[in-house]
Length: 564
Image 1 (tube, rainbow, N blue to C red):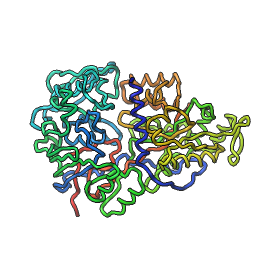
Image 2: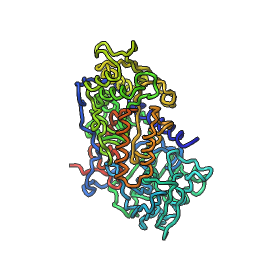
Image 3: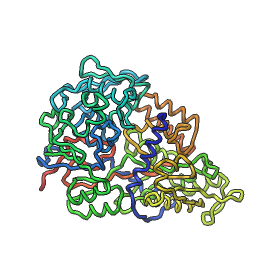
Image 4: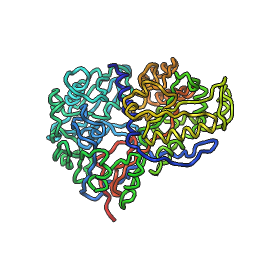
């Protein structure tokens, strides 16, 4: 299977994630003729950051994952959710601020220097103080072994599909054992993102396929490195204590625990004081339940997931015309759509102005507003008139005896999708566009057949953002790409994507990416709607944890504020 197909399968799974958990009821409030009902964006992060010297010593942090699977963060049986928590006791090369900007984590990485741009070459200077749980130094040999296991050339290693070590051509030791030289297959400006899931594992823990695949049912202390280290580990729970030999800022926590709790039981576990934080997943029932308890707050920030309207540009219907697509974009109150999609959880959406970057992320620009595609019903009507669709708002529009009707696919039984569809239907009716909603099953959406089949004029999907948003441009907008659900093809777009892929300067990459986004708006294959919220319920005294947005969790800083 080629790379585009693998990426397509991956993203089809991702787009289903936000709607599966969000079973909510419909909301209210009508739009005005121009502008959005709200323009205030979500917070970039909400973690109650404090000075660790103000923490009460001791206490336990208990977090839940759906299942533990393998403790090997590179294994196909592990999850990104677990891998994120494992950064408390495994090396992490980079940390991200709330704008998604990466800097070397000095506890493990003294520096990361790009020495060549095409192909990309990088020199990593490891912190010589960084050691494994038995005191052995972390060296280039560990990095070489980690890469070798999942570089696509070794047989028998069952690696996670979203690892990108195969994009590295070679890993070698540099001037000394604390220096690592990386050579990539091509120009690879987004190379830092390769280390998001895993940075380096101990060589002996991944030295053979048998160890890699079967020995990570536990986590021996000598395989750990970080502010915490293993006390016990099995398929039900991982328990860690502060690492007494940790060379970084010491944690004030007395214990750190990861529990396996099925997702549908996590809110109950939180309310029963069995875990200390829970994602409420956009559920009004969950939101009401946790808000009713004293000493609990819901920390809300922007998540890496956005919702975007996809047009089938190959449709023989009206949306095959880019002018009609532009008119629809101008007619939509994107804030109103998002707010009605998730009612009753303290969320008011803001319009998303970019297909590529997340609000607040370095590089983000509101290109929709700049190009005047923000909500303006009068402009929408003029565009429809110019496209030959005439009539009234009340009676609808027609052309050559054909009514202006567009088919909007919605996922049956999933309230967020149904609420979005209702809001879009109501808003487009105000400019004379009739929306025919057609239900698709969750099973058909989840297996990709709906998006792959293209039997729709419009559909709202979730787009997973992240620290390296430019890495998926070709997969999303390139001609013939499987994730290009709009079936939009344009040589100028393809050429711009290729230029971005080889541009080494971050500032220039951002300029080029925003130019690409603006070019896409002139053709309007998709409309960015809104950013989904990240909402995590916690005890009010828990510090430096909650809804991090794009920022990293500094596990050594997590603790509990002193009681008054």
